[in-house]
Image (cartoon, rainbow, N blue to C red):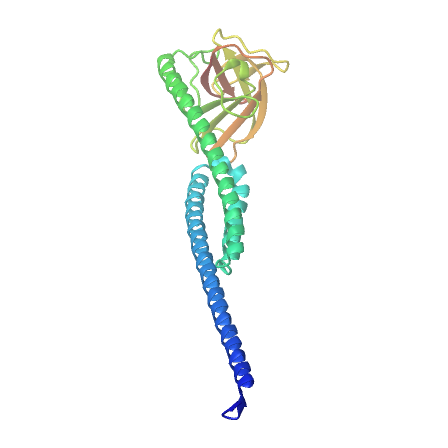
Length: 304
């Protein structure tokens, strides 16, 4: 039997087909909706993770900036640490390169992870170098304090000994320069200052010759070093000398070394370095300085 020109079987077939199409359409819409929801969730999770990594990166940037500032301050204050400057400068330059390199793709999660790893490594390097500098600074501060205490003690002893210095053979001879014009430094093997007799390797004597002093031309300077018993210290190059002063007086003494010095251009600072041959004993020592016709002066120092 036909209905509206269609048989009953045809009508049922069309209805069944329409039902199938509607079902597939609903299923497709549901699948697409579910997939879209999952993608949105993953996108939100990725955004949260990315924001978290950005927070970590920013904190590391801040820490690195603070460490760099501390290092630059330490470098400026401690010239004795110049050997570390190149390494520190390279590390700081490396930090700047890393930060500049990753600014362009900072939104990429993989890139952020790599950047954070490198920044953490760089931070650890900077912290290690800063700790090393602080350790060296503490050691230098301790040594400086020790030297200050020793210098203060020696200054008190020098005040006590003023006027007791055994000058040249004739006590009536007036020196060209006062004791305050001289400086004596005793050095050990690594060229650091010392006051310990067993570590003494070199004695450095320096003095300033003012412009109005009656001395000129190139002259031989004689250095005579005696212990507190007025005995010359032992040296294979010891020589006995006679200095005829301008006043006509003759001074006989023993010199451990000589050095040619040009006094043509004054004022002038003269430095003489004497390498200690035999180990010195603890006690006071006195250094007399002469030229060919002048008693320049006397300075004293003490070893413990």
